[in-house]
Each structure stands twice: as structure tokens, then as C-alpha cells.
Image (cartoon, rainbow, N blue to C red; front, side):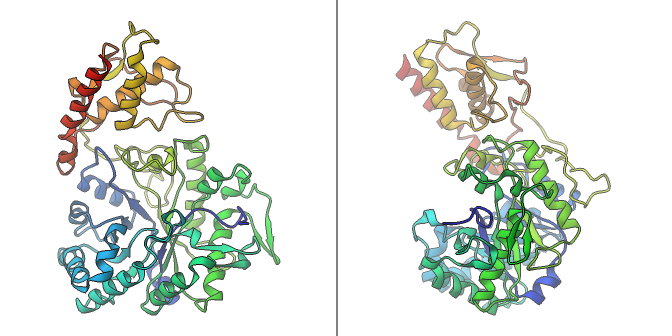
Length: 482
């Protein structure tokens, strides 16, 4: 059985040999995800990164708009190859060369500071049931070969983002760490290849997930303020899960003959909503605790010195899959519109505060809500709410969430408004059968924000202008109910 003190659902991205890694450590990084219905303009995001002193960014694909905006910013960039391209990259050297030419060489020539290519994203995640076991390594080899052929292998390093469930401890403490037995040979093969090519092992560590999946997980052990009961590993004391999990990986690398391989924390964060433990208070406590220790250059018992890390994540994404949990859309340090959620000193600004996105244009100050005259036993209401939540975002509703205290009428209004805002406040998007209306009175209450969207950015217009499809669906709903 896995010990919650040392393990957790994490994600991995591969790392650099120790000497190279030490030289590369400078500044904090952030993950920039783009699964949003109303994304901020890339130029706005890059300005946020610069204003907040964030010197590294990790992308989950090779989004052209994001990479173009990063030109001349000097920000170090990790670009990603999605899992659905692994088979193609594994079976075709030409495809790998074409990908590198289009997504690396071209942008490097335009002064984008690309430093890593992430081949896949958590391809060995247990829930994938081995789907990518046989394609990941050959894809990695072909991308590395393509980088060599392009003369970029010394400048751009490959990595394979993995979930931290690829390692575990047989003894429940870090010194028992090793790669998971059922995938050991695959992980070792990839890790050795990375190490041989001067690449890092990138691991994503999520104490929140351990708390989410295990009701017996000791809450205080998730944080960095020393209030947890320490864990003793042969005389080495651990006071938080991050250190224990990180050192479990260090031991796994040592046992496999790679004691000096560099480690990057590819993702670390805490969601602010969508779960009873996902809130601004816990998120601020965790993130500030991590940033304070990072700023102090404190490592772990097994690896002293600065830790290179990418915060997860920069901005909320309202179109992420919620299969893992409703919290998935709330990892951002900033809300979807680039406004800070809580106070966080990254140690990079003169004010010690997060710098928000500037010069944004919002839609009109109006909301779609339940009509006062609507009868709660109207059968169309439940169908309308289900439809609105399926195509909107109702992840802030539920026990312990920011909108968990709403009454029934307010819950319905929240669902309607989410759909309405996502569809750019189109009149047709607030025509649920005789039960909805538009108001200019802000229905927000307490911790629950009834959002207003920003004006759609052109690169996302194909999604947003396509909201006619959503509206057509609503029309179909009306016919069905009526």
C-alpha cells in the first residue's frame, strides 16, 4: 500500500544532468494552459509574465499565437507534443523532423527562447491503461534525432512529462523509493536516455490530490509551515509531503544508477475552487509557503539547494475536462481574466504583489438569471439547468465550493448565467423556456462571483462565434420541453 506521506498523484517532465541543471536554475516558472472559452490575448499573458518576473513558461502544445507573443521576451519556453501525436512521431522520422522545423526552428529564428520539448504529457498515467507505453520512447528518440539533425540538440533539451505515480515507496518512506514495478523497464529506458542526452527529469507534485483522494491524509502535512507531525526516515525528518515525495524520486533515481540527474518540478499548485479543500485560503497558504521556501533557496533533505519549478497554473481554464474533479478548472493563480485571486509574493516584484492583466475589455454588465415569477416545480427548469451546466461551467457549485452557500433559485441563476456569458451574452442564450431573464443587478453574493466574460479574442473566435451552435441546441431544448 502506498503511504500518503510520500506519494501522490503528480505529473512528471524529464530533467537535466546535475551540473547542467545547477547552471540553468534561475527564476520561477509557470504553466500556461489555453483550454479556455475566452482566452486572454497572448500578448496580454506575456505582459503578465514579464510584469510578475516569471522567467520560464511551460506550454502543453506548440500554440502559434502563444509562441509568437513570446518572441523577444527572453522568457524560457517549454513546448509540448500532445499524447495524440506520439504514435505519429514514433513511427515517422519525417514527421518528427517536420514538427521540430515548424514548432522549434521557426520560432527560434524569431527570437523565441525555446529550451525544452516535452514529448507527451503524463503518458504513463495509470488511468491511461498503458495506451502510450510503446510509443513514448520511440517518439522521444525521433524528436531527439530531429533536434540533432537541425543542430539544436545542445540548445533545446527533450523531456517526457510523467505523472508522479511512475514511482512509489515500498516502505512508506522516501528511502524505499523506486520506479513502479509494472512499468519499471519503460521508465528506466526513457530516464537513462534523457540523462545521457543532458535532459532533466521533470516531476509534478500535488499534495492537494493526495488530500482529495484520501480522506485520511493528514491535512497539515500538505503545507510548508511545520504544523504537521514529522515523518522519520532513518533519522531524516520530513515535515511536508512535497519534500517526501521529491526525495522518493531522488531515491528512485539513485537506485537506478542516476544519482546526479537533475530534477525540475514541472507542476506544483493548489486549486481555489471546485472542492471543499480547494479554496483561496488553502491555495494562498500552499503557494506562499512554496514560494517562500523557493526564494530562500532551500532544497530537500536529499537534494540541498534551489529547486527549479513551474507553478500550476497561471490562469484558470473553463474548458478543461472535469473527469478528475471539478477543481480542474480552478488551478490558476489568476482568474480567467488575469485578475489575482489572493495575495501572493513571488519575490519578483517591487510591491510583493501579483500584477494583474491590464486594459481588458469586458462584456456588458448584465447577467442571465431565473425569473422571479418562475415556479420551482416547472419541469423545464431541471432540463434547462442540466443543459446550461453541460455547456457552461458549474464547477463552483457544490458542497464546500465558493458558491456552495447559494439557495435553489440562486443555483439555477448561476447555471443560466454561466451559459449566457460563455455565449457572449447573446439574447438567445438567455431564453430558457419562460424561466429566465436578463438583469443589470449583480447577483453575486458573499464568496460567489457571477462572472462577466471578457470580449472574445480573435484566435478563439472560431469557438465563440460558433456559439450559434449552442444557441441552436438551446432552441432544440425549447422545442423538446415545449
